[in-house]
Length: 512
Image 1 (tube, rainbow, N blue to C red):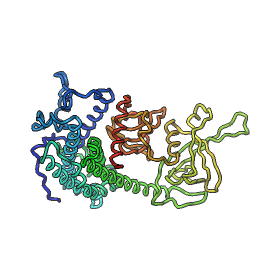
Image 2 (image 1 turned 180 degrees about the horizontal axis):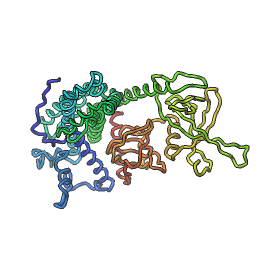
Image 3 (image 1 turned 60 degrees about the vertical axis):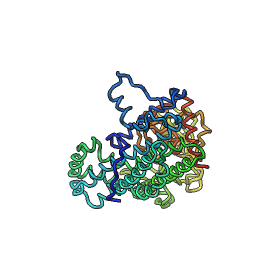
Image 4 (image 1 turned 180 degrees about the vertical axis):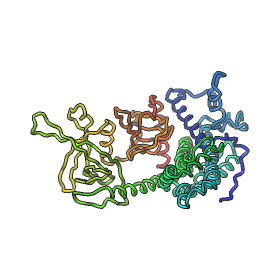
């Protein structure tokens, strides 16, 4: 497939945007679309069967006109489609379905354009190759050329389908056909993520020659002022986006139709691939964390082997333990630092030492650990407190601690992390729960945080008083914490109900 040449479609007159910019434009439009629903703009059906478009006045800026007219072209803007009798005879829902399918094709074309830059301009640069060892090349670029070839083949088939019948073309059967190839190239590429990040950072910090060559390559007009790193992370972003595009199509297919079956199967295949990718990345990250910790931890209590294939770190951090002396009439409080390492199967309590080392003095199975809000009225520096119960520690005893955290959000995050495992949330049982939409990408920094992409819809579970939110993403039911400045509240009940119904529609299709 290395010499595979994709012919250029005469029908898809896409802009020259690279995928990074194209994706940003599309996601910004999705955010604006949600805001329109939120402000009841779409509650009234337009009088014409053609989708109502925003009419721009002459006063609107050039950039506004450009963003509506050219940047992520619509299917109905194609000259052969626009004004045709067939378009006028289609219902609004049928038009929306075709637009959703066309977006998948357009975005793949833009994605391939960026992959071509990543492979031809960066990976195959003789100057850059000379700076790297064979191992560094492997870790940095992994199987990027294979990802590019699979994308080229996928786009070729999508365009053929589109050109066969521009009005009722299908894309989900094509995605399903290519799913095994996606798995073949994306699983190793995404699994390599940890090594890729480490290698890139090490070269950037310790190799002046690499830095200079990279600056020259990145300043080339072909990159459109985008960094190598933004090209390397594209496959991670694309595979997730592809699943959401298929989900968007699935929501609009006719229930019980053959197209719904194909959309569901394609969506399922991508969902399983992403789950496997995430598990692989998590497993590699966890193993590295455990190896590193095992070198830093010593036990003064009963020792147990720390490294285990199924063990992963959920949360860790230093807290302040409060000890009350009941002998004093004024309840004298003494404090001591205790470091908690919470894993999916156990909790370690340590005394922190110099050099980032820890002495474990107690531990318990996760099933024997409980975190609870503290009802005691404590003020001043002791206001963010919670109780930790070890129902049975390593000696078989019940132990209780009172901990203080620096912030309110940290207290709530510990209580949430220490809660027993939860079953999958039934969204329809939470019709009145607040919802927010991501307006600015957020990369999770800790294990209990939720990574967010623009336009993600999240159901809010709880707020802290210092700007953090715990929520569940509607698209994949992932749960975690994120800063409130990355999201906006969806205030309309109608908009929230619409979001829940769409997600339930996907769930029902999968069950059938």
